[in-house]
Length: 514
Image (cartoon, rainbow, N blue to C red; front, side):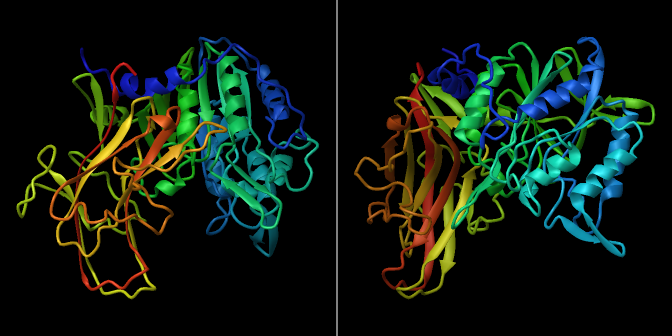
């Protein structure tokens, strides 16, 4: 039996485990529903665009920008106006701003006086002759200053009614149709009042994901574009804590609908085009999207008109597929086998983890290389600790299925301590809690909390120790980040020495029939 592609072997599992999406219409919600879809915006944009509906098969285009931050290091309204003039010149039918229109306090110094960022943004749009309608997908900085309501009132006066306060306690999300295509704008940021206030940043609530699934089911057969400020991947960046916190749940929903082919992000302030999970993942920057019927491509503005984008997309899906193999009816998915992904800025072990061949009498347990963690450590007293980490995977989104196991081999070589854990960030379906992961000997395989890695209890001293946990009980969840932690405990003094630990054969396995 041939090994299927990563998309078929791994991600398809999520679709099989999930309930089938029915042909249902999106549920209606009033404007005052704190977590309901913003139907007023749906109706407003469909109304504005209806006069230019055109034929579905004709070529047309729309623009996308993110993070204009109209007041960041001084006013940037000139740069914004240039972008809008580009849309007008390209005859874009509309443009979407994927969050972070402003920054900080609403009122900012401007010449001899002060100006609200919201007002200058709206005036900049009005100043551009032929500027197409501008749509908004909320970002985290819309919570700043006067809050979300002020942006809606400035850009769409009188459209969204019934908002009490500054609107920061609501998620504003909506969808609309145009020329046979479907467009969805999501919102992952909210602050609920209280002492202390509850801050939801970069997290899509369950009811928004449920609405999204119903909305996509009701619009099957339409090429679909999704806009969300926080990204679902950042393979060319190094701060994974900026990712959407429940990106696995979102990807699980989107992948059940093949019509969803494009998702646009901001937040990271760079342009990129990555293909993964059957999606074109676009980081903005600034882009023009050319649409013909049920196909789309990125384009650029030239003096002679629109031309195809010059940069080829990076195929992350192909890279992920190379991690999976099938051995005797078991799917094996390995992490950090032949190369390590670039470390993040917050990786305190980034200079101290590398892949090495056999050395000093230590042989890899699989393949030709093994991971080595080596760092000199100074003496510490009983009231101090050393907390070190290294991201091993920030790109994978791995569905958990029945029969799945997680394992790795570990060996200490005269290491000053043996506290180590490989932490799996796991997203569980609504209403389900995850339990602790223990290996075959009942020892914890993950941190009790951020600053305590469990000891290997001497089992890995001078020989390889195989650690394995059955994670079948978490079937239906997703793993979307894998991090190595090692923390010197603070309950006893430690002498100076070397942290010197080998790790190898990090893998997930599950029956091929799953």
